[in-house]
Length: 193
Ligand SMILES: [Fe+2]
Image 1 (spheres, rainbow, N blue to C red):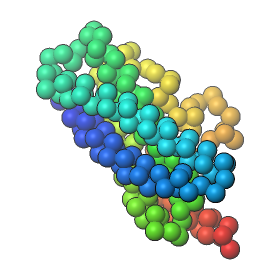
Image 2 (image 1 turned 90 degrees about the vertical axis):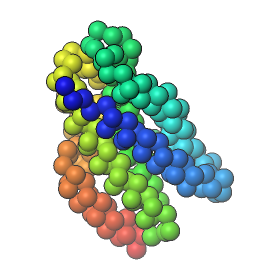
Image 3 (image 1 turned 30 degrees about the vertical axis):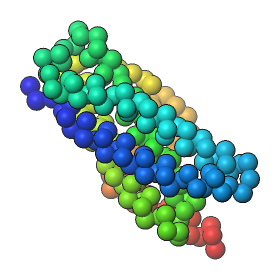
């Protein structure tokens, strides 16, 4: 059976690089924050991404070793079940990164950081959608091993107050997210005027 673990390895490697770029972009923002609110805001985002970097440093070698030895890919191998749990949590990590990038765009709209952040944002959005598809496939393949509520963003949960959800993140359609990007640009622009 062809399993998509090497695809996941590619996605998470690319994303680790992306979050490093993002951390470098916001470091001077934290250093030059004009008040405690601004400093805490960016520190919070930085810290979550830094933490995620540590998790990816742990996940990627494991993913690589399963890729090199696929006989260990069995639903009853506890290390493999752990790997599935970690992948599932990093799906949420991608979603969270996407929200951090969108938050950043509100701040850096019309600055030199807008374009690099937007390109990280669009790449992350595509990677998130692909990871979701891969996890659905793994769910199908390893029924029962992979049902973790912790990896489902609030926006995608059923039985939750609809007013808490952000429309852009409830869609599984990339095109809808691009539309949101354009709409948001207008909103932020009009706020500035
Ligand atoms: Fe956060």
